[in-house]
Length: 101
Length: 484
Image 1 (cartoon, one colour):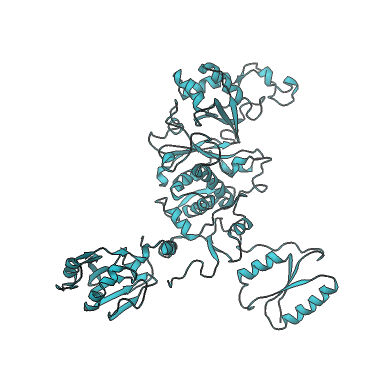
Image 2 (tube, rainbow over the protein chains, first blue to last red):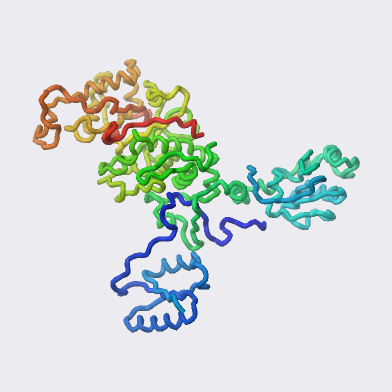
């Protein structure tokens, strides 16, 4: 069957049960006072030299006893794939993102 | 298959069109016939290489042409003239095919007749997707994506769409099936939902009915309940925002009760019946999701009660000595209706001794005294659910609803000395007044009587309400049939 499914990419589409007055995405949490005991993610959005910046951050965090998980978007030109977002939200308490070249 | 097919598909304006699938033995039987027919266009639903020998053979694995032609059986043979269908045959019949094609000696060696097979468009495995393809354009709600790695139930909790229990994901296909429960258009406005005063369309109510676990045939009841709850008289906003714990409850009357399988017998106010549980829940989810009424936000209840997840039951009309509630509130006999009312959780009243209506009425009245506070009057409404074994006492004495209501009113004229502030060593109570005349417990019309329950147990129930009347909430009845 060549038909394109509603779950063709493995995701599920649902209809919004609300009045749609709030954005689909949610607002950021308060910035934590300390990274102690938190799971830290480093997100490379795949802009040039983002890895250099994040490598250095990882070193500095390691000196403070903080270990990190590393993530990368496939491309900086498009929004993050929902699965990567889900992966980060389940594995991290905070995430540091390298935005610029 | 409903047809609102928007995709364009072309076939000759004049000539023959056949729709087949290789999986169908009758289609394979007529393969040589198709190959021999001049000027024939064949659309193939499964195997694009089937049938052999046809010059104009087109891949219809997307089923676009099959849907446009409203094919239900294969093979289907259609004749077009001037762009208009003029004749159609389904299955194989030598005589019919000969007549339609004008070729007299078709299919030599084949049997005279063979029935066809179901079109791919009828297959359950594609039915859901075709439903969305053909009718999805009628849906206007924002589409949200739950990622493949997200657990569906968790994702719906995370987004705040639930009352704390799992919900059914409202996929477009489920919402479209839900909408089949009503003749109303998806974009019709049902009501303005408090507290945010948002217009709820039939579609939004259907989405929340899916969340709640409703079946499509419940939808008219849900729509009527939403309409009733969002009236000025019922005042869902005030009921939501009050620090008192009551919430909206629904009692259903009329033929729809049995049609959708509601419970008015044993455990009528309890769990275990899908229609009872999910209709009440759908109303609450509409208020939560569309209206924005959430606990600890605009819902300021100090305590609340478990029935705020959803509280709906049907009246036992067949076994009742009383006129059905809806009829007592002006709905013509034989019609279905909902009555919404402010409700706390139910509280049982035992009386296993009274065998006269006078004694039993006084006994039930004593149970009703506790509503709000035994020393407070005329503030709160209440509903009395009379169980069958108690109703039998009234039936045998020939008491109707009005007679019972009058007896309860009389028994609920309270002695001011007992309920004045300070009386009984309790500061709470009514202020001392000039008069020592008895005071009515409930405002006129503030006590509603319903009949429901199992056949055994002399246990009726009191359902306390909330501030009654224009300053609070009054029960509201609406017919279900206009929402079918």
